Image (cartoon, rainbow, N blue to C red; front, side, top):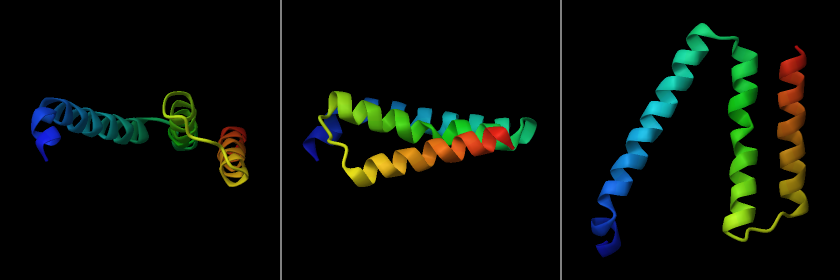
Length: 81
């Protein structure tokens, strides 16, 4: 709880950025091609995984590699359609 009180500004910034990014995605969905935007949004999971491996020392298991391949395959299929 003490750490949360010291980091409240960073938490507020993260919350504001979260709202802005979600709003931007909804606006893009309204005016853009839905399949391409969805594929782009889903690839963010892959970037999060890469960052977790690089900076947090997370290990990729076979299950995680399979999930990443499914995401990539889905993004490719959405782009092709």
